[in-house]
Image 1 (cartoon, rainbow, N blue to C red):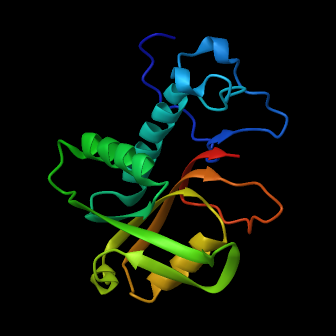
Image 2: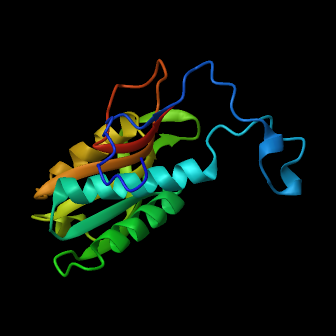
Image 3: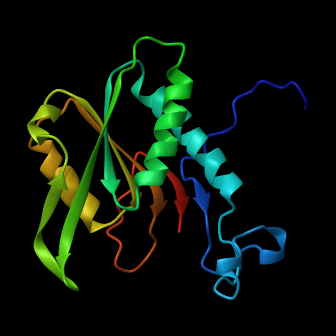
Length: 187
């Protein structure tokens, strides 16, 4: 009904892409000519991604309330997702003086050549000891064993709170079942 201001239900799982999902036909979209011949279908349209990121931002703000946030963006893939999420968080909190956000960037290295290493390296970021007592939001693309190792590493610095926002939740036999606090899509 038009004008209805009820909140949309929170399904808590994001957009689910089933294994047999054929995707959207390419004729429905405009895309750069240099991709012609390389693409077969569109799995998730840009508009759905934008809408879902906006919803994630709203859910995150509702969850953490009025507090300062240290955003840790996991590079390289997480950059665009993080930038869009932070922009939506800023827009939501624009009329509030109670939120200060600082963004830092880290890279995780858990492979050497094509072999998994026993220990994960965190590359970059300011001194991670500055996370002590802070509210940390980790923004990354896909969950997996690496994120569990990152959480374990960050917990050593004794932040006040750690939340994870992920673009994708992988459903593969190698997945360890980790579920982020907020995510856009089960794939």
